[in-house]
Image 1 (cartoon, rainbow, N blue to C red):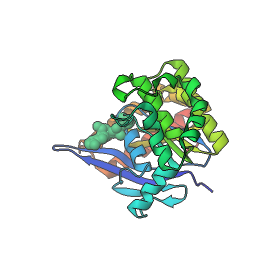
Image 2: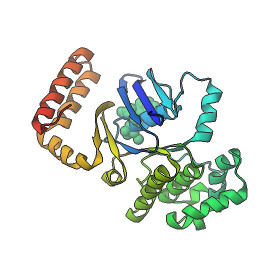
Image 3: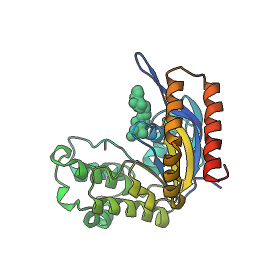
Length: 283
Ligand SMILES: Nc1ncnc2c1ncn2[C@@H]1O[C@H](COP(=O)(O)OP(=O)(O)O)[C@@H](O)[C@H]1O
Ligand SMILES: [Mg+2]
C-alpha cells in the first residue's frame, strides 16, 4: 500500500497581471513510505509549487494530495494544520526562519509545540551538531548567519521532529560539498531508520546518488520517473536526441497560446513515443 505521498492530477496556474503561468500541469506520482525520491528539473519548472501543494500550503486548482493516506485538501483546515505540524517536516527553499529568535530557539519552537522538552531537544541536537557544524551558531540571530548556516538551521528545525514525511526544497544549494553529503546522508538515514518518506526538490545532480528514484519535471509537466541508477544514461541520451528541448518548446507554445491543450497533448505524446523508440525502452 502506497501510504507516503500520493499526488493525483494536480494542476496549478498562476495568474499575473498580463500573463498566466502553468506552474504544475496535471502531475501525478507517488512516493511509497520509507522511500527517498527527488524531484528534479531546471529552475522555474514547478518544483517549489509542487512541494507547497504537497505540504498543504497551497491548494491546487485541480487534483488531490494524499499524505500518509489522508486526503489533505478534503479535511478541515485545522486538521490539515495539525497534520503538517506533527507529521510533516518541510525544509523551505527560503528557510523561513523567525528573524527575532536565535538559531536554537528557531530549532526548538516547533519541537516544543510537539511536546519535546529542552532536554530532549538538546539530546537530539547532539546527533546533528557535529555533522552539520551548527553548535557554535545557537545563540545567533538569523541575520548574523551566512546562507549556508541558515540553511542548516532550517534543515535541523524540520528533521529534529522525526517527521513521517520530509519535503526538502533545494536543501543543499548553499553548502560546500562535505556538508551537502552530510545533509543527504541524514535524509537517507531518516528514510531507513524512521521509515520516513522523503522528497527532495533539487537540480543538483549529487542528490541522485542518495535517492531511489527521480521524478523529472519541466515547465510543470512530468517527464518521467526514473530509477536513479539508469538516469544518467537516459538523460545523456535525451540530450543527444534534443527531447527535453523539444518538449520545452512545445510547452512554451502552449503557454503562449500558439497551440491548444489538445494539440499539445497529441504532439507531446508523439515526441515521447519517438524518444522511447530511440532509446529502445517501453513506456
Ligand atoms: N506566486 C507566484 N505567482 C506567479 N507566478 C509564480 C509564483 N510562484 C512561482 N511562479 C512561477 O511558476 C513557475 C514555477 O515556479 P517554481 O515552482 O518556483 O519553480 P522551481 O521551484 O522549479 O524553480 C515559474 O515560472 C515561476 O515564475
Ligand atoms: Mg524552487
